[in-house]
Length: 351
Image 1 (cartoon, one colour):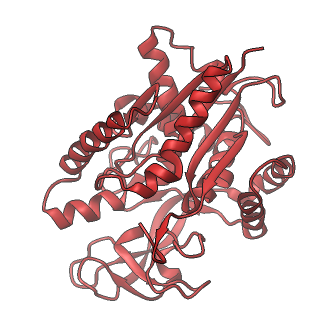
Image 2 (cartoon, helix red, strand yellow):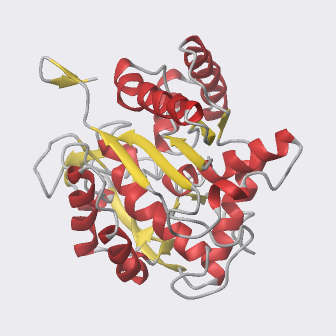
């Protein structure tokens, strides 16, 4: 019996060309998987695109003296051409700056907000003491308070994989000029992750066929779930779709909030291009058992937390689970498997 299978491939940042680690880690494996499933008679939807928001783009744009849009446009072309040269069998390779993506992201945000899973509260934000410029996420580096890695970023430590905030870092410093930032309160919207702890724990217990390192890491994350800010003090990204916020030029949705929703927005875009706007639904909706569609997410180890905890939480909340009402896209299935590779290294260094 033919099955519907979603192959969701991690979105590369549009801040430079891709390297062999991306290709070997999840680019080629996801393509081999999809080709096999098609040969087996299954219906496959393989989607991805360039991730074009957030500080990774802005930091590189600042370095090159161009706008974030110019940088994203250039590297979207470079990356798309490279992937075409490898003959990877995407059904759609898109980008996160499309009108469709903005609309889908904002619909998911509204559903979460309406169901009480997104709330406003103050957060300490890093700013430059000399210019007053906001320094979110990758604009700040320092020492990880968990593992001691000295080049941890203000959003995540690439060494131990834990999520961080700039104020968590030991000896934080600005990537712009090396200054020590000061921290001031700023209003942000938070995803109430603890509200999903029980549902996520029960779901992960059923994922017995996952790779042991992915499953154990994901289960460990549930031991200290905290509300997570999903907005930033930035002028580049998806606007916050609420009265009094959408008009603001200094607040945007966090890049990793909008990026993981890209799998859904790409599926919706693909469906519209086929002439059947509902063609995405068989890949996303159906019974949460083996009779329903399956979804496989391919990525590097540094992205596991976003796909095994945060993305499932967004899917639950937008579907009205554990409480609430399903949003625009109805009840959405959780990932069947999060397929993560370790970093590809050469002489002890990762690419």
